[in-house]
Length: 263
Image (cartoon, rainbow, N blue to C red; front, side):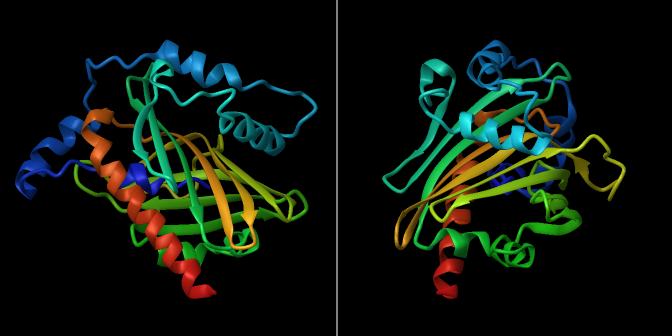
């Protein structure tokens, strides 16, 4: 699944801890007068999602990720509301923000990057491996698994950093290995959110997240990620842009270092 930690651990480089604590409640919970373009979100993202009754819930998520990572259907342009955060040959990252009716600001991320490994090596990265790759993961558990349908319910919590408190998510993950050259996974929060409730954490909402992994050659894979997650905050993209970039680059480097070590 896409790296939610990029958003969860993004922060402003505030001058000192006292100033951080003073601003934390105001920026993390108060209603904001800022109005990102919600209509653009409906036009750019929601309009691409077409419900197909013949598909199961998990299959529908997979299809949505296929559509939302297709640049012909979702052009990553300024005209469509996207902000380019990283534009390098091997790493690209775009952000789109919108405001929900509940007044929380949602930052949608689209990423594309390469890793020097095979699809199977990438798939083999386990929950315990992810804890080593990403030190900001506070808890990561497999709640329930359906091997027949390649689906599982998972719980993940990220350490709070800066103005954002600790966030956690309870979600369904669906995955499909289409061939030796193509792997897709998708995730969405489930309706029953009564498991793993922690007062010290804010429960986030995964509207949809996922990734498509393609084998480009014998030693390189291309990963396209989509991440639409409501962190229940009013922190704006303008205040999170640089931290998101830093966290994403760190995540990519840590992931590559891990697969290099495994080879």
